[in-house]
Length: 206
Ligand SMILES: N[C@@H](CCC(=O)N[C@@H](CS)C(=O)NCC(=O)O)C(=O)O
Image (cartoon, rainbow, N blue to C red; front, side):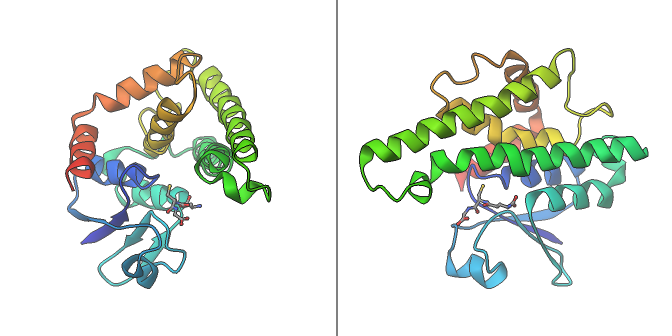
């Protein structure tokens, strides 16, 4: 059986949702970042980490999501199979990995971005992070104008990828999503899905 190692509320929420969407059996194992258990499986100590029952391991959220979408084509989560559809899926996956996820790092770990240990310096880094996140959410919001989902081919793994990051923005941006109504609508659409509610309840209950 496929096993997903996840941490509550982390980006691993995306493959957790996708596994639920596929309807195939899987095991979700809650871990702590950097724990001995996780480092033994993934030396980076990070989630998501996916393991197949022959021992094959896959890390990196974007790669895991692409793998799951092609492993379960019947679930219809690739966003389309044409050359351009695949390129668009890759483009938006890279956007979430490199632009959106990375823009949260100064907020989550401001001490990594300054050698000044003062509270004022830490706060300045966090505020710079807020600006970066807002810039990326502005791009996503404009893209979503008039769309239900991120890719032309309908609901896809890329929507699942956006979901944990949208939740972070709701919690961490000073104005939440008030300037991003299309992102709010995407959030509400995904959050209303019964499979997503199942996963959120599981992560909250563990
Ligand atoms: N580039 C990796 C980043 C994974 C990552 O940093 N995940 C976070 C949770 S959202 C984590 O496990 N952080 C713990 C750490 O880096 O120590 C990916 O996209 O999968």
